[in-house]
Image (tube, rainbow, N blue to C red; front, side):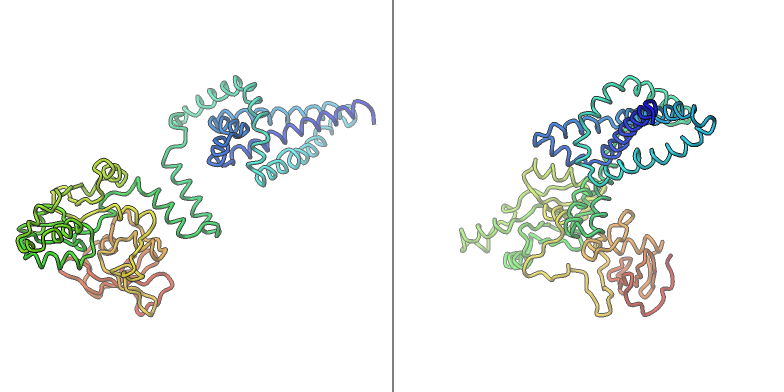
Length: 434
């Protein structure tokens, strides 16, 4: 074997090593976990700081690595062809193409990328500093290439604006990752629901989490004192809205603690107790207010109780800090509450009798269902939306894999539904639906 051939093999091997470096670095740095790298940088890792800097300008990073990889692959093939042409003549092109394709594919692409996928974080930390040097050297060339590329894309109506990751994409990525890990068994259902609840807060309105007026406990201030105390004690609520004249005329919020203190301070004056003086002014919020805005308002007002009104000022319900926490952590019942939330009665045949005012989000969380809640907040609202009418008692519908039967209706309200989840017992085929 002559000296030229040995030198050629050594040069091609060195270029293949560079090709493997570029290919593996591209895979590792594009697949690395940004959250983990930021935490490592916070803990003092210089390599993680380099990774974060590289990933921060992903387009420049990929451009530099692709430029380097393309250059060394073409150069290695050209050198091999030039040297072997004297020995094999015109057949050298065919021979070199076959050999270099196999060699580059195995040792320059598949092997380093497989290693990068198997050891993503470690690989990224190891190559971060040298890749930073490569990006700095090739930066001017990459910048020129980027301008040419975006100029060509603009000819097809593709703009270079908003190329970065927006908040919606970040939320979707986190949510998708959590659900994927849950399906793989590495994330518990409770943790999945909790993270999803946090992500949903920015999209939820007060109307989505409030306690509807149908379930809201209120007290008429004109009642005898004994009746007021009896109702307040039976409710087990710390705060109760107080109305005067008619239920929609809320004049204040009565705290159980204030009532107890007043009674204990002067038991003889109980019959003449001024309940109005014990109430605090009501705070009204629109049902369209975002939950994130509500939380900020809670902090500013130093309270966690608000009455919800619609655009006409009509009372729609109430919302407390506990309602918001339930969206994140799930409902935490007290020791006297049933194991299944109120309004849901499981049947022995696997079906459920559900009050129409039950929120869809509560059902999805309780039973791990996947009913949509974009067009309707309650289960009755979902049936009406899908049926495009207010169904009569006995009508059955099927959609989203579930079957629904109207069991009870009061005027224009569906009060009770029989729900058959996917795989549940079906006694009769539904008469309509989609």
